Amino acid sequence: MDLVATNYPLINRVRAGDGAPQYVAEAVLDPIEDPFLSGHQYKGAPIVPAAAILELFAEAALASAPGNRVAGFSAVRFHNGLRFFNARLEPVRILSTPIGPTRMACQLRHDFRSSQGTLMDPDRLYSTAIVELTKNLVESYPITAPEDLLPPRPVHYADTARMWFGHGMRCLKSLRFAGNEGWGEITGDQLEGLGGREGGRWCMSPAVFDAALVGCAVFTSMTRDRLQMPSEIDSICLGPRFTRPGERARVAFRFTGLQQERAVFEWTLFGEDGVVLCTATGYRCDLVAGRPGECLLGASL
Image 1 (cartoon, helix red, strand yellow):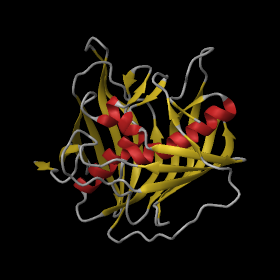
Image 2: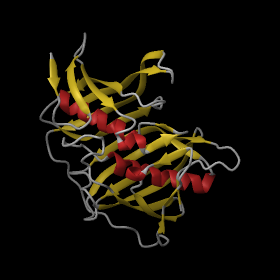
Image 3: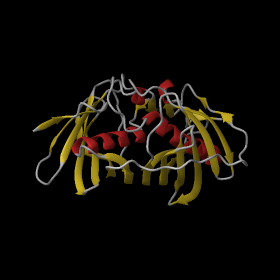
Image 4: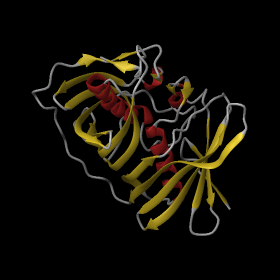
């Protein structure tokens, strides 16, 4: 029996899966009308941001287990980048399997087709994660910026780049660094309409979350002249709320080193009132080299 998930902006419906206790949530992504796709392009083709994948996982888990809140994520893995090579609407599936009273193992799957529409890899696995659920409010604590950072510098966005950001995804406004640490200011747009949908309860703002990742990417671009692509996140803890529309959030991040040629970061996102909104540890990224003279990252100082 289908359960209509009307309270979420991305998930259209969720149904019982076959066999073991499992739920299958369905979403239809629009590379033209969804700003987090049209404004997030790799080599000229829309690619689903890591933040939007986490939003899909969160919505699928909540639709499958009503009455809970998302406390965070663990064991997040980005196996393949989900790109769009034409303007066709694309249905995606999120498989959710309960692995305990407060945990849901999620998979993002999609039938991969060529640019001509030929089915190349049915039911390809793109991402996996464990969604941590709770029935209680998540506690948080205030945090303030350290005093020894350099003055902030505005972030500039390029018109063309291998990894390009459109207007709706340009939420990172300024950055400042001190050694392996960085501090950025983020201003998010209205959540309504971000996914080409009206209404619905967002679990997190993909554009704001993505801006935190962009801050880490700018650091890598400046220090290693490489583009970084999200690969893994060990743990994400969500606070009592996410950003409010128009709120000036801040991200504090620290580069912790290289592991098997992957850049590793930990970071904290907090609101203008100092409340911690999100923390991430073990954020690992694959490093990509560019061609001579190529603009790799569409955000810079």
